Figure 1: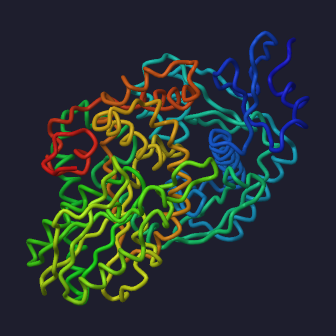
Figure 2 (figure 1 turned 60 degrees about the vertical axis):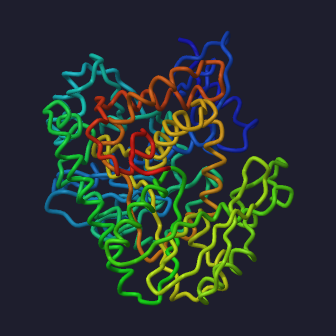
Amino acid sequence: MGKVLAQVAEESKDSYKDAIILASVNGKLKELNEDYDADKKIEFITTATSIGNETYRRSVVLLMLAAINKVDSSGKIDRVVVEYSLSKGLYCTFEGKFKPTQEFISKVKSAMHEMVEKDLPIKKELMKLSDAIQLFKERGMTDKTSLFKYRRSSFVNVYDLDGYKDYFYGYMAPSTGILGVFDIYLYDEGIVLQLPVKSQPLVVPEFKPQEKLFNVLKESTSWARMLGMSTVGELNNHITNGDMTSLMLTQEALQEQKIVEIVNEIKLRPHTKFIMIAGPSSSGKTTFSHRLSIQLMANGYKPHPIAVDNYFVEREQTPVDENGDYNYEDLHAVDIELFNKHMTQLLNGERVELPEFNFKFGRKEYNGNFLQLGNDDILVIEGIHCLNDELSYSLPNDSKFKIYISALTQLNVDEHNRVSTTDGRLLRRLVRDYRTRGASAKQTLSMWESVRRGEEKNIFPFQEQADVMFNSAMPYEPCVLKPFVEPILFRITEEDPEYQEANRLLKFMNYFLPCGYENVPIDSILREFVGGGCFKV
């Protein structure tokens, strides 16, 4: 019997700072339980990489579910549902006549650590699709049976940990021995499985409840369940039944209702002159700003859009990153002093000529764009730093109304497999960059990690400081984006460094049936990415 990759990884572990969890064989990802071929190029992947960290997190979810299966001897738990990401962890709920307690958590953690100590193998079994459907039907995992209804392959990979069997989207660790870094907390009606991040794979981050973010996620999940679009299987059912148009319009109506609620909150704050909007890449900030402005006008306001990007410093003054490249996401890439001077003058009723930044020449220009605020005028300011008070340090707090917008995906593959919010935004950006900027999928993927680092530094730390949060994600959008994104991802070849990520996204898109975009309303946030919208974005 030949070697498996795990044996070679064990022999090579001293050459790596962090734990090895996967292998790249001739550029293709492989689990460590697969056979070793000495004639092929092998690179090991650790838990300190994005793919390695995701594999670790996924494997610990399997470990937790197997432990819960052992601990729940009474059978009171009908289902465990992995809902969404929260505070570097995963929020999970329970269905059935059961409410988690601290005693329950202690038992689950003890069972998990016991399995880690034993270093139990995580076995992968290629199972007939019909057998897998029967297995998960018997175990009450109805989301999986619905998902597999649309699977083209006759077989499916099922993972087995100490007798507990489950299906997961993505790769797994070879065994439980490296999965000892985690913690579990009681939160709201469920629990949070707290997990390490790639920058510190041996440290469990502090659990910091994010009340505002959690409430938005909870509301959005409730909407998705109300519409019957909380899982991929449900979504595919709607597409085959031909009732997507009404569901699209309902989702848009729910979002418009939320925008109206935001305007009503603004009306309760008579001193508001600056609406500060921030959010990560591909959140739909521009379209949201237009739709918010329309509702403001309907309520007697005169909104004026201002892009913080027009206040960039001259190019030669732009901060540089560790590679010596211009860092346009740094706060000090903005002329903070000039921005505050102009905003203060406007607040005081003065007439101000606003700059326009010429990105070609890297200079601010003044082209006669004068503005003076009256009683009904209000500024709608958009920029990645808008929630950071250092940007607007001179403005009174009661003059600012802060909005955080993000595409917080409320759709799950099934009860144990999430659709990542980051993936949702990445799909949007791939389509938009190709359509509006002529950027290839390879170019977008190559800079995505840098974009995410900027978000972690400049946006996410300030999100809880927002007065309101707006979720721009729609459950149906992967189906609409599918026909746009697949052709451009297929252009990435095995020789490209971005191939693994492109291949992962293509496998992910296999879950979804395609859906046309002709019935997406012209003022929809999704139009910012697929085109055909009524706003100039």
